[in-house]
Image (cartoon, rainbow, N blue to C red; front, side, top):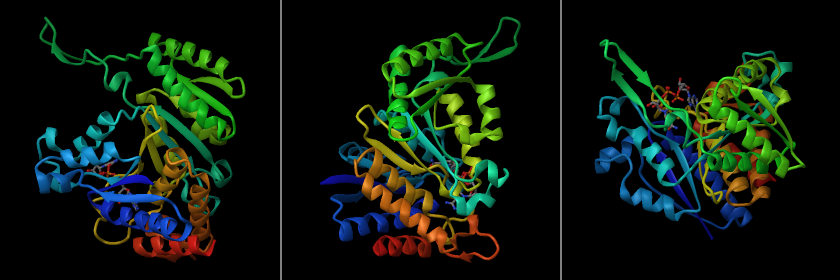
Length: 359
Ligand code: NAD
């Protein structure tokens, strides 16, 4: 029996996670998936109830679980709080407490939604990239950091880009393992022509490449990678990169698909345990209206089944059901276009469950 911690969080998090839970319950009741679900508080909702965005009970639940499903955190209501208790602290706390160093962000464009992209349909239709971003190191965490005042009275801001060999190696291995389950190609993105730290990155990735002879490894400078992502994105299978480069490139890749409500993500620890969540936020502008797209969260469950729970067939069932509802012409407002049937959050969740039951 696998235990899944369900953390809906704030805003639309509540609505979209409820739909993902319906999908999990359908797999459990109709297809014998052995899971136990337990809900916890995180983010602003947790702050309101307990005075902290990451209550001890939630951390305990997340640590004891095999996987975590998270909705989103944040909202207008909590924006003026002290930074130490803002909803985002709950999310960052979970990532660091669970040691989630590998962030997997697929950018998939369902052919049915090719018109949603700002790029020409032939450039992006059928796109399927996986960006593997290092999540707990690099310039976002490096010391020293801060803003200091120089002798001449001018202020100077500084941060440190630092990666140890073991940090590079472990994210590299995640990328190679994922490529082995996909098209077998890894592109490592760095700035080795300018930054010594990423010169080491390239050396270590090359060593790991030799240890994985079945995988085709290439290297690309980050500026070129940004250009190639919008010029010919289908050339990529798996991209692996540093925390900051990955932050930027994965948002760019996500937007190639034009549908923020469709994209799942995963953050994994050393043992493959993970936290799964849609890439979007809590969308306070549409919260409580039953209009948000739940598919990114439902597809996050599929990733959970594939990468942590080792249930690729169940994952395939969800992906097939999502394809089926798109084929039926069902669309939430964010992906709706002329001629399609507009549905609410809960109607979309029900349609996915119905498609699962038809399989
Ligand atoms: P957002 O992703 O919440 O929303 C951006 C835009 O996309 C909004 O117009 C929203 O309505 C729309 N959108 C997002 N998800 C959608 C969905 N599933 N269906 C339909 N439309 C959707 O980003 P934001 O507006 O910059 O941030 C809002 C709040 O979310 C902030 O408090 C921010 O800190 C937080 N946030 C949280 C996370 C997270 O929990 N992982 C990530 C990003 C932002």
